[in-house]
Image (tube, rainbow, N blue to C red; front, side, top):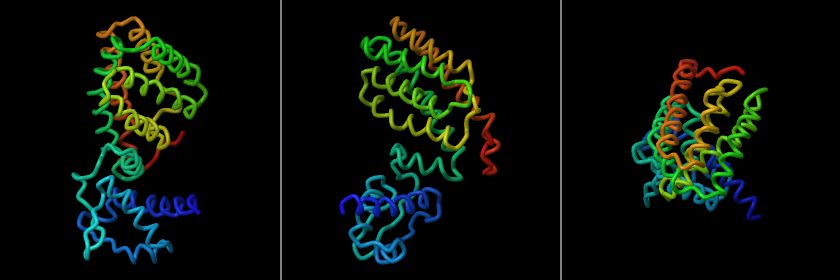
Length: 243
């Protein structure tokens, strides 16, 4: 019964969340609990659980005798992985991708420089493993397999920085990379230059070359932004790239 209840509240959550982030419910819209119960054919307990999650993301706020009120976008927790995922699935995708890629450009080079000083032997080995995994899956339209190594590589860099704030951005970067792949904001085979840069970053970190690691990682993020600008015009009209 517990799993069933969770499935029901996720059903409500995954309908309301994307609708709110897409602007279907503008700021100030009041969502009444009884209406949500009727619409989704679920109990009040299920609705309340879904609303609690949305409140934790700061998408809504509950007020007694008023109902559930949608908050303005500037109050949302834009670092929440679900909020990122929902926004990337909507019409706001191009702007969201640019914003998140700019964030990566600011954070990841600094994290790589710190990792060159702080990374453990195990973390260095993991970086090499995933960089080589990216190489081996970078041809033949293996984007799903490539994504696994790409996410793991960047998570390790953020964690190896030794900075807990950077490490917490691992989920954010994972959602960005996943969104790019799932919504086809990627070429069928990754850019060979970018793949090679990941290998060189792993080498720089292993060798303790902070300046090199920072410079190479910046090249990766600059390249990601340039690739986005090439693909972005297709998404301004809502047309996904055909692979």
